[in-house]
Image 1 (cartoon, rainbow, N blue to C red):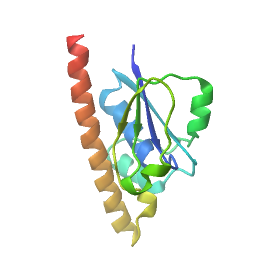
Image 2: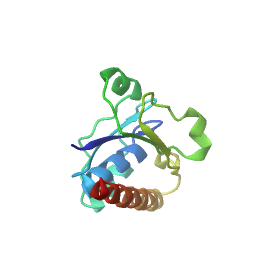
Image 3: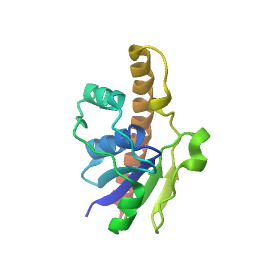
Image 4: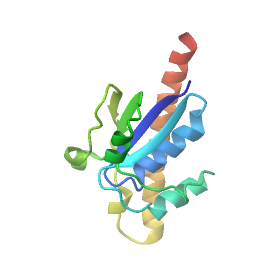
Length: 147
């Protein structure tokens, strides 16, 4: 049975969407990832573009409120916040017995400059998230093999 993972950020528009898509893509045989936000906004087109470059289409994804996920009664093995340190105090806490992690990544909605510069910064965030996802998958694939 797949372990459920919830990625949370403030708006559920970029970082949590990227993390969920990468985890589902990289080790979807072990995990089923979702994402949510404290104040759901609109899906960030930069996130859509940089994931499309990696062969993953999230263009039809919707944003959702962490409160709605909580009300649904779903249980998660892992809850991972992906807010950056400057907004950590507003990053939501998801109640329950899940194992919690905090991975800090910059918010693409706060990037400034020309489009290509914002895309490059978002690619760096995608790659940092992907590296963290790889480590998470490696650790948990090893755990699954021994249990």
